Length: 309
Image 1 (cartoon, helix red, strand yellow):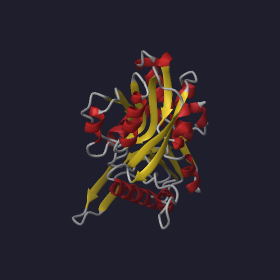
Image 2 (cartoon, one colour; image 1 turned 60 degrees about the horizontal axis):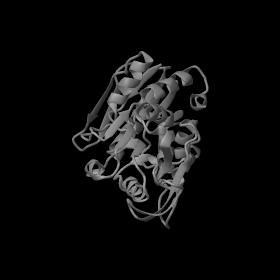
Image 3 (tube, rainbow, N blue to C red; image 1 turned 90 degrees about the vertical axis):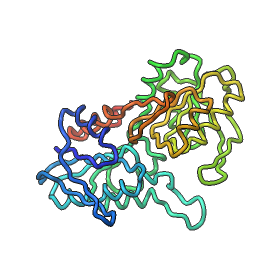
């Protein structure tokens, strides 16, 4: 077995191999003067089972292209099998045609990864589960909800008064995954309507938040607009403490500063995306042990779904 990493999130890759008790295989990554990416695997991997760790997080295009080039290099090096570990799956939010003449980029990325030579993909909290069906190869969709549940039990003094909230109808299954692990806490749902790119309005709230502590669950924080609007609506309806849990903390420009000014008391994310956070409100939970255990189970032909039962 060999584990290699692209440049997108080397700190996470290092934590994963430490949990596995191994080391990263040396890979040389360089840029030509015109901006093209070059890759060279520095040791023989002929006949190896290789795990490639590379989230396609911002800068998405560079990291995606780097992943595809690594896969091609490995396939030409005569490896036995390639598993792509994508903690964050870029372009996942365009998973269907919502308007005429739009692309389905989530499907396009799947086809590119397959064409480049991947035999299996492991992701964490895909934006929508049906992305698994865009591939013809096996796809394991891990979830950070057990990690968030453990964090909530340890850090929240008000858990018995808490409700779990989804900022939109599409995230109900994800939010229910956390609610279930917190002794079936009540669920609250926001009816959100998008009025433009990165712009959404909350028109209804299904459930009661008055005098409750609210745990908002989402998969991605980009601008953070939807999350902060949901928190504001909950506060106006009488909510007490409001925390947010999101697997992928992208935090586009200005998002962290906006979070500082919001009514959110704490934002908990994972390290699927490499970032430096200057806000005391933002806490990070590592997915490295979860991914390392998934790799062990793939190697030994054990069930991955049993991790979340």
